[in-house]
Length: 388
Ligand SMILES: Cc1cc2nc3c(=O)[nH]c(=O)nc-3n(C[C@H](O)[C@H](O)[C@H](O)COP(=O)(O)OP(=O)(O)OC[C@H]3O[C@@H](n4cnc5c(N)ncnc54)[C@H](O)[C@@H]3O)c2cc1C
Image (tube, rainbow, N blue to C red; front, side, top):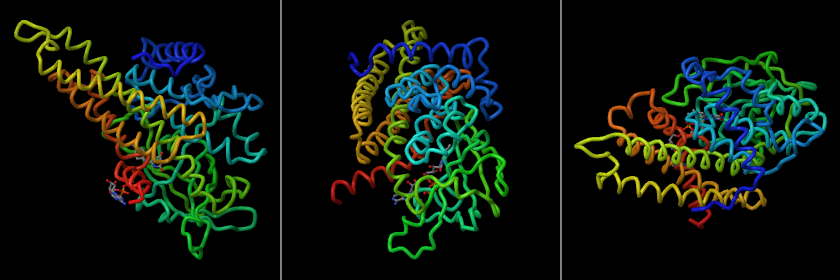
């Protein structure tokens, strides 16, 4: 089905991002396999992406951006990265652009913008967001990392875990408790502070070993009497939970869109493979069982794509609801898992070999049902919106 979402400028952007991936990431010079083994993407990749215009496209021109508040550009990056078999979250760029950037654009004051946005656009400053703690993930308001005021600083104590870009990050948007629990509404105790590389009392723990998404650094962070200037508070004290909730629809749409792009890429690799591979004297794709499988997947991916395109339009128009984003996230990530699994089966034993992108895609897919809010929580959001 012909897509009506994109204009010429998006296709030009797609072509240049594709060239960037080919040149720097997956082509002959590309070192993605090396980064997967190392468990981290080198920082220079962010700087190269910045130079190519692929970071923080929504940042205003006075900070070095192009002021393009158009999520279709982010979508293009996600689609092309999946097509290239590296996964958009695999490079850390999508987290930087889709998930962290909005906090800097919306909640920073002018001095903070001047300090941070040029580096975020150029890739010299890599961002992360730290909400999850060893003792809690889904129940965010029960976090225990605390920031106590001391003069013009906060003193931060606590620990975060599973933080994407956790090793590379220079700026970590950190959710902390600044309240004392006296509010009727416990959400009012949460604030967001930006913790910078090198700040006293801030340490990084292990780069965690994961089932998939191996090139993505995912780390533990700890704060012990960490000293953070009050000038690093984002927005107002006590409003952090509200800021998180208002940015989560974009985060969830980003994950959902990447999931559909991953499913589409898996399907394309599989269609190619089943035409080439023969068994019992015929291409394996010509068995009715294979044809039915692939016909089902084609339909599911196309239907998901149409919903995602509609959600992107809604986001650009400022109309994407938390429920729609939650529906997109749970349904599309489950689709991604299903497609990766059924496609892998069609590759037979080769599907289990990591040198085949389908194997990596299968392992990379598993976490998308968990991060960005576990899918059970997504269904809670949708269920509550039904008045249940
Ligand atoms: C690779 C990776 C990258 C990540 N990146 C980041 C990051 O950059 N920043 C960050 O802050 N976090 C990050 N996370 C954390 C992620 O968001 C959490 O793992 C996720 O929100 C789930 O929290 P949890 O692991 O504590 O699980 P739990 O909250 O302990 O949940 C365990 C299970 O219980 C279920 N459950 C919990 N509550 C309910 C309920 N009310 N109803 C029904 N079922 C429920 C969950 O759905 C889940 O199946 C990342 C995680 C991974 C694995």
